[in-house]
Image (cartoon, rainbow, N blue to C red; front, side, top):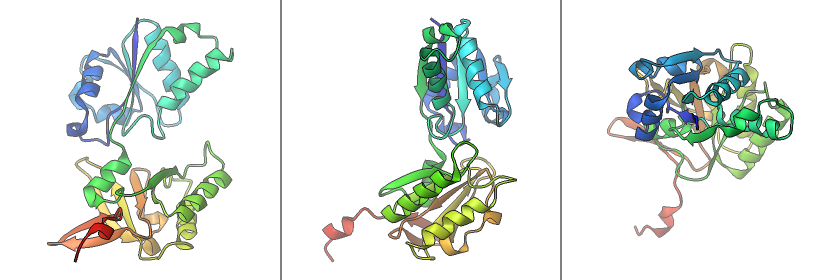
Length: 260
């Protein structure tokens, strides 16, 4: 039976690529991804057939990967980060679900052996680079309203703000979509202080990595692009300086067990 590996390669640095994921890429003949994600793999793509598809062609990528695997070719469908977090894994199963419902005409897809492999997500990489911002309850919200109505996104931001979660914002801005991040900021400012730490992680783990810590009150869309993960602390998140190094962490409540 042919194999379809649905895998996340992590934020960029191949040192963070899991050994099992590396082995799956090496075992694949066909690689399907947005071109940048394949470029980040470097020599791991040697000897493989690359199927680069642009941003916005996600459905085409998922269909192509299923078609290649159904044709008997070991195939890897690849995203950076974790392919199950705002990425391609869900599309594979949505297409299979449509086939089961009779909405697709690809019965061969149902014979494909699928294995999903996680990767280190951008929110994990941002938190680790800065300390331990995800040390207590947290959530992730995409600010892209291409697939989800803004009204739904705003409801989720409001709920997360009320629950005092640390929030990682994916897809914070684009060339045409600028106002949503600042609207999210304003919602959060209703329930947490302007001094709340915010981590801006750009090109995480890559040579061009840039990590900045600012405050929620300082956050603007001009500081962010699509390569940036925005991580907003809860009301309890702390920003400290140890020997000239800045750290951000969210305590879990261990202070209740500490004796002065």
